[in-house]
Length: 545
Image (cartoon, rainbow, N blue to C red; front, side, top):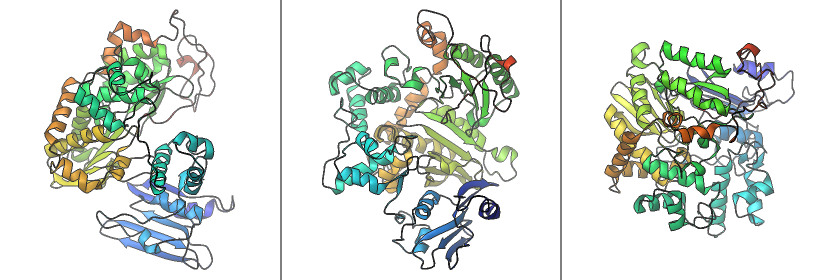
């Protein structure tokens, strides 16, 4: 693969960026820049670690001051930083060997670039952001306007927020962590106020702790807090107007205005009857089918009017909401474990099903993903998740704080060789502590990185009970589990909620402006719903997993 990338395409397009990261037979591999070391006079530094099963190589300039390229096998956690360092041609500020030597436990990784790439969509680096702050920008909205950062996919906005906070602190200025102009509290402070005061509605929260009418920032945030604490249906009168676009219709809206339907398939385990039912629904409503990275089947292209009828059929077949639209648990991915795989040492599928059914519907500051691998070959990619479990011969290793966000992070080891019940108990505490203390739309990796004391403090809180709140956290999770009900089952059975899905308030007419595509033969004209006869591009939106 390295040979193909380094030679074949280079003859076609001069100096093309051939960097790539992939997974071959379960092993992470990444190459970037001049990975083969073809630059005249270049030098290399490499590390072969037979204990960790990794290999790292950096290709350096003749004077050893710049990274020209490299190859990573077995561990690509630093791929993004090293690629950025290569593309920026920034001089090294640390010895090159420290870039590929794993840091000591609890130690910080070396800073790779003083001018890091913040927004890859608009190619905006940290010096441009810091320059805008020096010129007077004091909020993310102004930074977006001044630099263009965050105006593409929006994935870098948390990084913008963090850089703004650290730069203002360096300048000796106070950074406001208020949720928005209507609440002079952070998300964590507001969560604690609602929990302690026992507020159950938006009006109660706004009247006691805010002012004005609210906005698109604070309304979904308060809705999430109320859902986390009380697990009431999000389309209940009083809650429904607070929801964002996806939660408002219990579906992920796509680029062309249609919606996605994704039933829950715990652990990726599904029966033949279930597959037939999903296929029948897809055919009846002319939906595009996609196997997701989270071991589920995504049905795309549903009209809003059809969502209740689609879900009635799926519920009758034994399915429930997969919460692909919410800031909540998405999936717990698993391999086949010891049941089928000759390498499996624990039953990963059963544990994945248990965890997904336990934490389904848990509303949180951001979406949550998990994975359970039945052995150290890691086929479920558990360390790329917000929490992941990997089997050992003695039990389970629990990893936390990883995800596939703006800067992908490997989850870090929290505890080793746990019994299954110990895994569940620690996860109950970990998840509820995250729900309590994270900022709005903050992924678990960023939350853990920004936590004072980091992993050691997290261990002290949820393992050693330093704050004396472990019993509370466990009780809160038990209340969530006991109060869970399928959101779509309630929605289709409640006439008031069901009426929300009509396209027009005063008519049963359908929206005839939706456009469809015959993309690689998935949808044929004969398969389209009645009244839809034209085929034009159907763009899809990501993130359903």
